[in-house]
Length: 379
Image 1 (tube, rainbow, N blue to C red):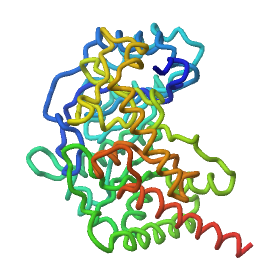
Image 2: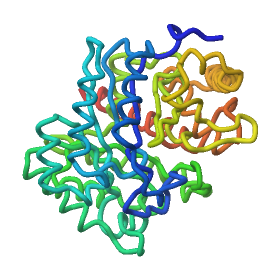
Image 3: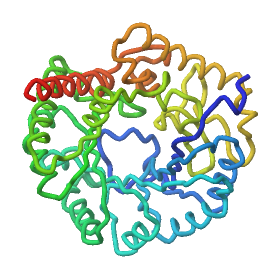
Image 4: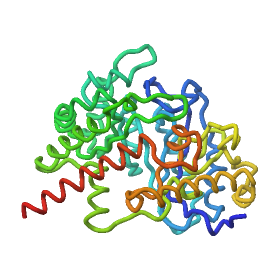
């Protein structure tokens, strides 16, 4: 049995306000995104009480509203949620609220809430319409970019800063200049790239084809050249992480956040909870059963940590991390890779390389190292 003091501390609490999304993105990993049920205030309060009584809260953490479109619920719900959070937080630590949104439902009430409550915002958009509207569509198959840009403009009009997450597909790799110009034109100051991953019901990625890795490296190298030549430079999450790791020797723990039990806690709209990769919540496997380990209304952290099902899951994830450490030279800058990617691509957590790590970790790190070496040689 693992004791509560040997898991966590909690770094990220992911709460699913609803599984529903008003869009129908082709690469979405959510298995139940047509379900319009919503978390109740009662379930939310039980979730927060569970969290703060669990012993996991030993430092500040982030509460991320995600795993469905959070703005499907009105801003007034999150006002209630914030008050519930303030009542439940018996710790001395600050909780930062964050939400990831497609921005199509931004309105005045949302802007008012975000500013007053200092909620961090991430906007999902994939660039110009010929890229974004290929995959990020309405439920009737229509384009969404116009509505997203309207939402982004409202955020800017209210002086609300936001980051952008873009999912890179095979089509994206031909257009580094167009993507860069799109971000600059629309006032984006910080971007993060996710690659189209094999996750959940999305069982095939356009990035899986032959010759994709050199194409990705060419795209990313050109994009970073544009970034470094801009003034002020656009912030790129992947480049900043690699640069800090290389220049300042900032390295993750031996196990990355997604590989450490209860560093991340994922809770769905019914109060069912899991840990490790958020993408595992709501799914199951023949070997491990449901990845939901319990429910906040009836299962304590101690009872979950004693479950053979949890112990087997943690052991398999740990063995995967050990294999990465033994075989991969990028391990000091990665920490073992997301177990969700390993499971969905390789069918087992005790495995190593995935499409995600080849592109999102290794390629971006190599490009950053090359750029930094060139910059150093010029000084």
